[in-house]
Image (cartoon, rainbow, N blue to C red):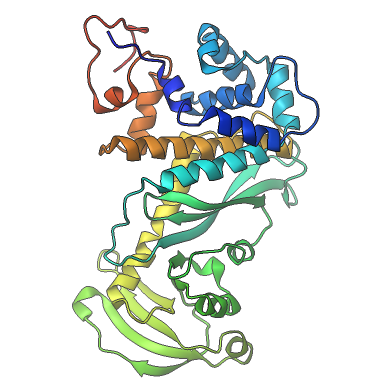
Length: 383
């Protein structure tokens, strides 16, 4: 009979321990605890994300119930005070660096996006995470409200959050967008919150294409009109230049304006892009696909713990967010590796109820039943 480690152990084995320890040493601050370690912190917090645990007490009690398995995970049992202190004091930059390592591994297995063109496609957006100002005074946002903001550049190849930044709630979307270094030739879809005519000019100079919506009060002049296919919903396809005094200085180049009517909703849109090669309908479809980044935000807020926090310091909050993002990449890697049609949510649900089962991970995802001579650790588990 083949021996299998627990499902959680197999998930954590996707992270080479020597790489983790190297990052931990690089991002070390202060004295080490006697029995605790950064690996123990990660194991505990990752388990909490996968199992959907909400509070510090809930996390510690859950991991304590599996204390006899912690040795095989290379982890020590943490008390509430130890876990709380590590989250408060030890730099979250470790998990930001770990996120980068996991992202590189995932990028080697991602499928291509659904469009026919080969350019990398990104959707850029930000989502606000509300916080109680009295409990999180460092997250000043409004008079009586605290918040932080999660900025994501989502790569449509595998829907990976390739560019991630966490800022204070007051940070403007376009300010962060200008800092992102997209690869040359890529296409970036974004909403009007990123409107910056000077940035459009800079993106064009760098060979980066963008697709966004044109503001209704923009002053423009039509330079050229192209024929359109009305049956595909395209109402206009024009080359324009800006005529506003300040706008023309910031963006002296000619851009493409596309009018489009959605046949399903009847709504009309006006898109702005610097890509003159793709079909007008493809430009409209690119902007429509921008909705995937909204679905990403919805998924992580519903399925991972990034809305309620077990610590109140900035370091504790950032630690929890970056570990949640690392867990998302682990799930994505498992999805790519298994090559199954299961959704990320289906995979997460399977893992949640089998975290401490001794089963083969891939067999579990494929739905293979337990062998008759293989003992089930938890006979009540819903397989």
